[in-house]
Image (cartoon, rainbow, N blue to C red; front, side):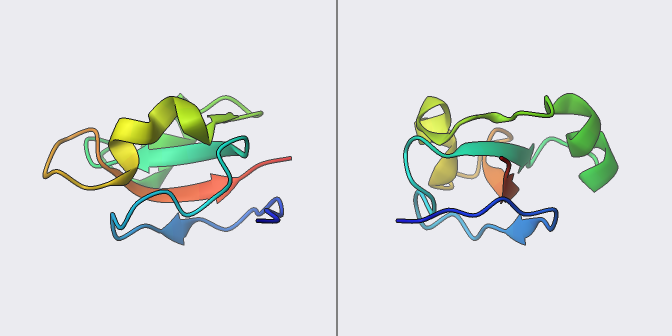
Length: 72
């Protein structure tokens, strides 16, 4: 799976991991008040997607990922 860096956020419906395990991503969790809050809480380089495995499949938890973007 080839992941490209994106400045656009992608809405995530909770159907599992949509990127490669080693892709670096920035994410918006359900508990983030809005996209701006999510942007402030992410590092510029993101985190490896595999470190968030429990959050990609929605479980009606505040830690569910609701949006993401792949970063370079």
